[in-house]
Length: 231
Image (cartoon, rainbow, N blue to C red):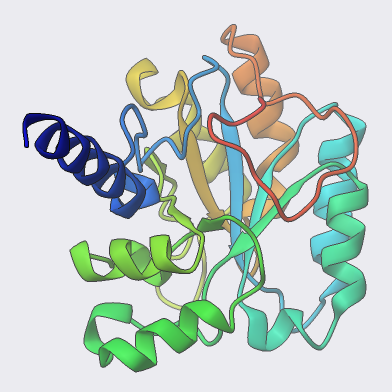
């Protein structure tokens, strides 16, 4: 009986580990997305509806500077332009899931939230729209093979003043003046439909000037984004 109890206890422990959500794994920091490198990860969300090729140009610039970024694309746009996802991965960038249609996942039924994630762009990182998620979304993400990935530094590039998004100089200053704690092994949030892509040259220059290193571009990627990140 003692041996049988020991076997059952060991089996229960294994099952508990296997059932644990991926983004709740020991040592995984949701805000840093598994970035333990000391380097800065730049991330660009959503889509550029008026000029989809702007996404590829942003990726090309970063590749030219030896930088690997993460692009979290909304799939109801990305599925219409598969060449863009393919181009970003050829350029050496990670491409993650930002849901199918960018809803607040916690506001949906469980089945609807599951389908939003399932029908998102296939990857192993999920950035919930608006950074809005809870235990249910974490568990759904794990069920579908994803880790939740948010950010440490929100540039607030999406907040308009009147009709205008903040310009490149403003965004550059927000990153430059942010505390070291959110930049070292940190994750910077910007968007593809704002002026953030225009600010990238200055942001990269400033981070280098402040002594920060950025995630290194070491060649093409696949949908499998490892934990910890290969920065």
